[in-house]
Image (cartoon, rainbow over all chains, first blue to last red; front, side, top):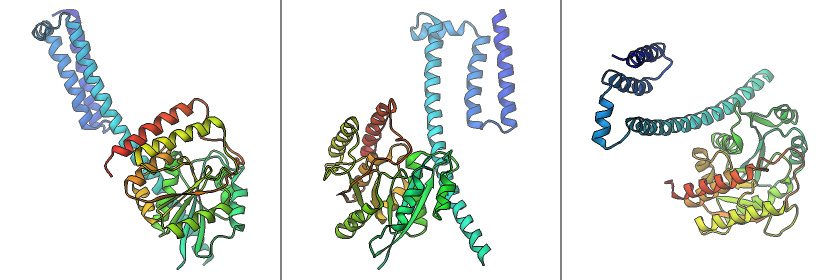
Length: 119
Length: 236
């Protein structure tokens, strides 16, 4: 095993540990953790099976293996970004509704309070 | 039968112009068949907008987040729906829209039975007519609106408009956030609502700043174009 493989495996290990910890503490939703775990899994696979990247590149007809990594990663990141924008839009919509409801409720509460005081 | 009218005044940092407008509303004689109630929607202002409006004795709803004009107006529309108002009149907090002109919209609502009545600056070309570049932009929106709805509405960006109960119900469920005026018209018209335009005389703003200026103009045009087209293709 080369040095870089050991480093990669070590980083992977801590990465998995950290994401698991975040889930246990309830700071990360499970569906996001799955994505990170898959990423970690792929990283782990290639840090052990280092010649695998070359084999797959050759099979797909990619001349330089690093290009395969970059294009695959960019693709994954783009999809993930799209997902995050979707989540963000939904959250924004929910915040709008909550803000409006809160304002209307607040007004109603104040009106009721003043009505009570004058009784 | 008496109709209930809610005058929604979306306000963001309007402490300068608001008291004058609210007092003017109090002294205005509205058509007899309407019970009128103003509602100031304070869109998380950083100045004393809320206090100033309460000092005038008016109802205020205060948003804890700044939602922008669309979210603020929709909050007012939701309030109207909850409290069984028959009409919502949207009016700027900066004094551009003279309260005396409200009756023209109400009259048109009674006569035409339209769901949406827009107060337009451009039909008679009276009163404050805004700058040349702005009018150019408004012309463009007129063209866009005609393209998408096959209706000719001149002042699609006007924030002086009256919504009937069908429009209130629709807008309570969906209303655009950022620059809602042109887009919501396409939405209303696609939902089969009737839209009428009435000539009104507007004034120059009495205080505060326009939400659209400088670089954001381009952003505004692009965003409204895009959202209008999306509103056109979207299912209702």
